[in-house]
Picture 1 (spheres, rainbow, N blue to C red):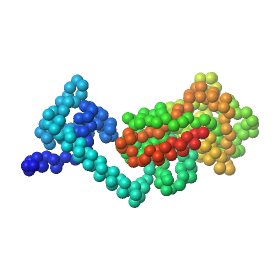
Picture 2 (picture 1 turned 60 degrees about the vertical axis):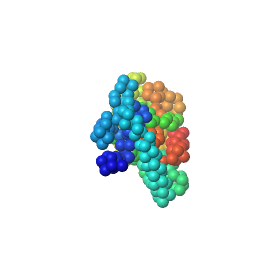
Picture 3 (picture 1 turned 135 degrees about the vertical axis):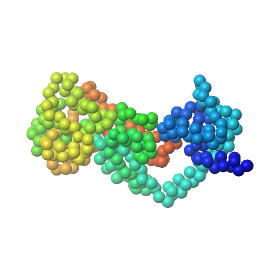
Picture 4 (picture 1 turned 120 degrees about the vertical axis):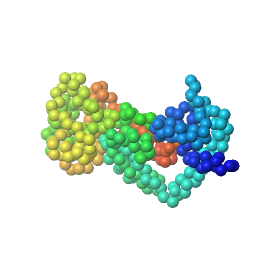
Length: 318
């Protein structure tokens, strides 16, 4: 190999090789961007760099996609071999790291089930699940998952997934009313009706993909001519608790979250009858909770661990 050719090869990086491989195999730069979880402009810049290094177009644009040049045809097999070699090296390093120290799993969770998920995770053996750090779902959560800063999220199937994969888990089967234990609402709770709830101030926890625009109770009242004079929303779980405790507001929560709230002696919780839950759902059906994640190639967790998380969320929503 002459010095000039060696210099060209030394300028290559693993990412560039993967870009070449994906474009060659699919004929589309957008597919490479999706698989590598990067922006289309980054792929374009990488392809420009490859063309400069090899002093060749490498791919011509045709109606059916990008077609390789003769040089690209000759480069494909050696580049595949290099990619395979780097992949083996990566697996060896990952296996060694996993053996020495299990990395922390970062999971974003919708705030209206995050407490229940945390409690369920705390009951799992540490040597089975490892350390898990939960993050309350925020406006930029999908982007953080896409960029690999979070491993995955547990949110709603109505959210903008930003090219991420969405796996439906379940929909809550029961809802509870939560309020201050001294609230006058509890004086007559033998048969809770929506009409009873709307007579009092109401607070709800805003969750992206569900009630970030309007809450089901508010929509039901609008559709059925009921007056709901005092309704507020909060974005943080602690603010939700404070509002119920100090503003004497009622709220609705999934039953597992309600059970946790009931551990506070100042709060009282009672399950909403099925008939009333169906009335709410008639105005605004509850969306599925989903696992929102990157493509399998970019996941840092095993299929077994993924299955355990899905089972935990299922148990929380029953």
